[in-house]
Amino acid sequence: MFSFDEAQRLLPRVKELTAPAFEEVEALTRELEATGGADAALRDRIEAALAAWVRDVTATGAEVKGLWLVDFDNGSGYYCWRWPEPRLEFYHSYADGFSGRMRIQ
Image 1 (cartoon, rainbow, N blue to C red):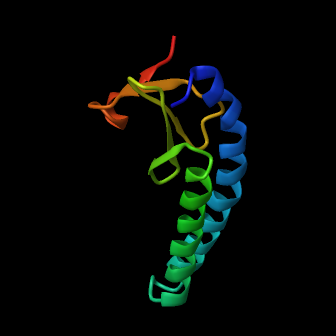
Image 2: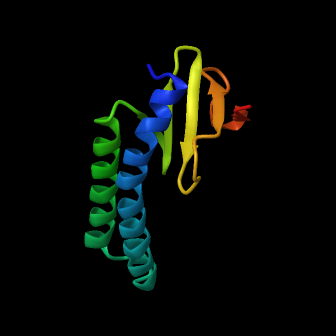
């Protein structure tokens, strides 16, 4: 579990892991689209890049909840961050999930 301060201190590391993964996946996706989506090797590379990102972010103690979406458990819900948000600004309860995000006051 993370206090808000702990989650804020970890966020720069999560962003460091996310930025290059996002750029790699975006570039590979453009290549895949140029082939009409038929290149299995490119699809495999995209999956591998995403799996590596999930593994690396999860190793920090944060939770990957979707594509470029990271949550920090605080005991009553999650501080919620999505690439490329500049700061940790949102919270949601366990029950509400991403759709119930509220701005942290």
